[in-house]
Image (cartoon, rainbow, N blue to C red; front, top):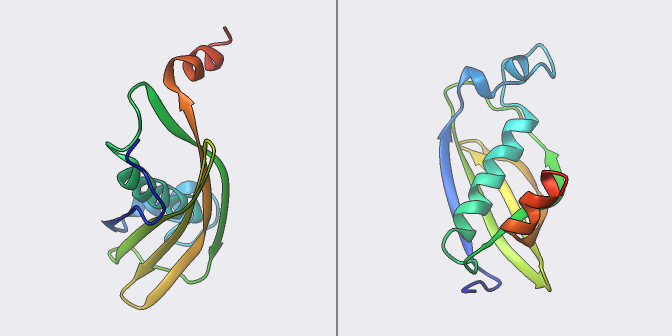
Length: 127
């Protein structure tokens, strides 16, 4: 496994109508939704992990802690950054942030757990 604290990645997205709270059904405003922020942060985490895990493994979400701090309109560019802070056995703790041209939109910590893909899928299937 080629993974160590400090491993990081950033992704950029343009906020679309499908990314809004109104589209998610979580409010009636057309601004970047918290579920979309979580998705963007998870994509940045996966970019930081891609190619660095042992064959036959994956890392699945275990805990999400996020503070949504500012609204972002449709059409704005957002950047999601994930930095691996700590490795504790199979647990990977990431610091995440999402920002737009006006500043910080959201920040938090996500914990993922390294799993055997085969065993994980067996468990998901009820085996």
